[in-house]
Amino acid sequence: MILEIKSMNEEFAIEILDWKYEPPYDFYNNESDPQSLKELMENSYYVVVDNNKKIVGYFCIGDSAKVPIGVQFGAYNEELIDIGIGMNPSLTGKGYGATFFSFILSFIEENFLRVPFRLTVAKFNQRAIHLYEKFGFEKEMEFDRGDTRFMTMVRGCSFT
Image (cartoon, rainbow, N blue to C red; front, side, top):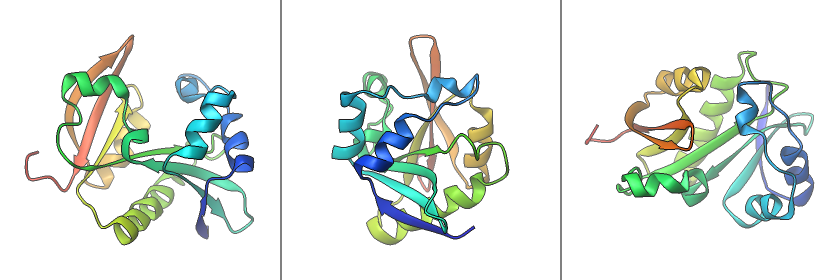
């Protein structure tokens, strides 16, 4: 699979907002509304496409990758580069995750040169956690937002 990074545009954003994941991953379904579209268009979101220009997934960096309530729990006190990813639901669970995630990490390392990395994941998402662990991410802390437990994971930190 040949991958390429594109800037987010309205066409990509609308397609991503219409994605529907199967339970329990439907937690990651987005609302297709003006506020969600604005979030994707006005922040640090990028699209990953394959050689057929089909969306494989997207990622974001910075504050968009954080779960806002985590600030109250001290989840984001250290100055790290926060990353968030989303993979096309038609491709999840089929063994493409490592290629997709590796491609994103390489892009960020080459273009932003800020490591270490931090990501936040819903704790029930063991599939994603397993992938992140393969890339050297380690659990840092946990916090709750409503009924959902989140976990921050870091890579390349001396304090972990």
